[in-house]
Image (cartoon, rainbow over all chains, first blue to last red):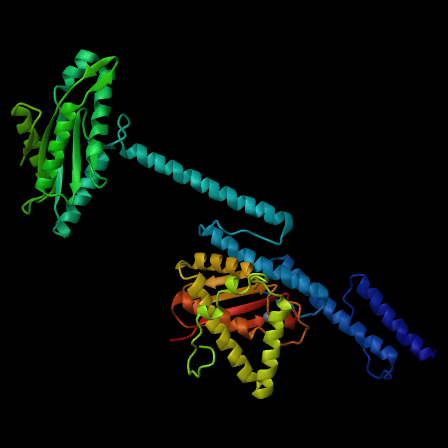
Length: 303
Length: 176
Ligand SMILES: [Zn+2]
């Protein structure tokens, strides 16, 4: 081998040594080299140097989270980086989706990370379900009467207000029923509160059997109840009220080895054009109830 | 039905026939090589009869019809975008068309970047520095156009054949 060739090979091997020892050597200057095999080796070494430099740059960008880096080199290792880049970009999008509440996202192709990530999303979804369940339970507690499970005064008034506004706006009709269990105080005094509670419960269960799904029954006082009947005129409400009066009069409640019978007085009214507010409707129902009470109880009076 | 002259696409899902009935022994599956054989001999023939631009236009338009048909057939009830993507991912996977992933989605500007890994058309093809998934471009444009009820275009920006491991598509709304 000629002396000049040995020198050229020396320079190439020095370059490779630098490359392998974590330096970024300048490209080999091949100007003036003969067109021979050694020059070709030099050219390959230069191409490899450039590709490795691009690879290192891309890996650095990905390592600091810059996912938009353009990975230009075509070494097989770059293909893996591009794969990783696509996975990370998708993961970034998925994380945003999860933040928006889309808990259906699952990560694939990232080994242990996939497991942990997917577990986290499952846990988040479980927490959310639990909180939703608790909210529903709180909502239920806030809107229902604990003894009977029917709606409480607050909910009933909310519902009645909405129904009033809706019916006025669309010129629809609705009816309101006020009910009071007759001589309830006497039942309590004679048989005790436990029996009184059983009577109240039996009363609501029996009412609900008569009512349609759209009718809303609420316990608004100790033995006082209201019903709002959407899309129901006076005649319709009267039929419902009379039916309730009848089934209650026929009802036998067994409590503490006693059979209790009782009756209910009912006032019925419906929305009229002149009603300025919900209060007017409810006042009229109350007045009708008062008349039913004074008229001997176990009666339905309409107003 | 198949050999009538036409000026506009007439494809309908029913043209695929009753595969279960027609292939009681061989079933609904075939080899990826067969699909590619069809795709690339067809491309070859079209280019040799016309030119590359025409071949691309034909593949894109065919993809567009296919995307719309698959949307009509399988994704019609996915009004919500997230649901649309989830069902689409599942559909592409169950048909072994590819693994679809979203890299970005801007619902206000109607701009999306998607990738398809293990793409039926191109994964494993020899490197050529060409973006070859023209049918997929039309296919994705058809799906998005059908989903949003507006005209979208899709452009492949990276492909297996250009050295990427995934095909990457930019999907944008065509300005009205
Ligand atoms: Zn491709």
